[in-house]
Image (cartoon, rainbow, N blue to C red; front, top):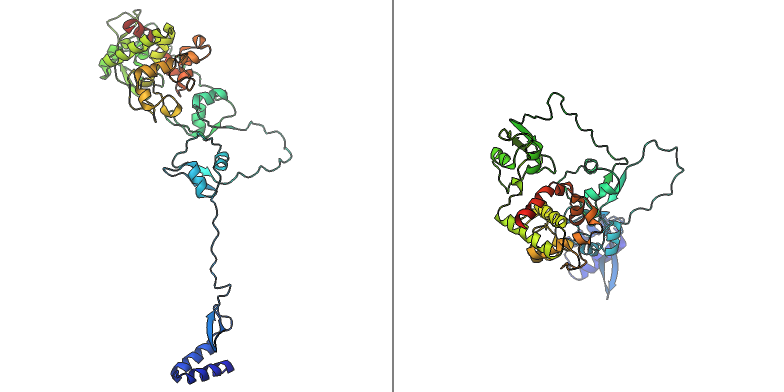
Length: 403
């Protein structure tokens, strides 16, 4: 037994500690290994010693340092500023790292980079030229559409949709990276018409037509030499019905009329609310001195966007006769739903209630020399610009009927 244990026993014996307890204490002191994680160190307190546990480095549990993740998935209610503050970052850095601007919109599920992108390594000596051009990418900015991107890179909408796994109903957003084929995908050649069927006398009895993007009942009726009224009757449709791509339309034969007779203009007949809105668009256009062609473009645009109805719903926050979006500067929801104001904003010009915030038809340089669809598209920036031209003939009929 060590000397210090003897001294402890003597001291405890002097103050009346039982011998059994002394034995336990002594065995504990003698059994403690020198390399224990918490060694006992004597410390002086007055005339007596006390034991102090001093942790060794092996006994200290390491606390991991806080690190910022490389990426963060946006949750509902998040903002860029709040995310940056949460991880001790500067908002401008998070915006820069993700190719965003101060007015960019983030959405739940979007992945945001929280670290600066690695610097590009120094280029290695160029090998022999690659035989095929590399693919391009485009980072979406506010106001972009698939149509505009396709025009910019001299390719087609279908090629961009296919390269990115998108459909014609997909929504693109600022900051999204769009893959663009290095070479424009050639449009497939149209299938040759069957030689056995004389084009002058098509047999339309029992024929069906598969609706494609841009189709209208008026155009289908003209194509098959029938009337819109016959299409309504054969398919259980009405003037306010909407057809959609992939829908099968039964085309009844127009046996009662000779092939040379032009198709009637039932498609120009509107129901009461539509006729009221059409008359309002025509009246305001004439008040502003807009040409008949400009008024026809406004009518066709409203028909494509809302079926000439003042809708209180639409894609995202789109509203009203022209499906104008408050979030992109067309006015407050109440202003967009104000038919008089929304019509004047579409026309634009010197008396535009929105001033220079948005661009109306009269603000488009050279709109008079554009095609019908191009002029409407310059205002609306739609993903389907070809739809407006399909209503050109009907729009002039509306001016004659309701002007």
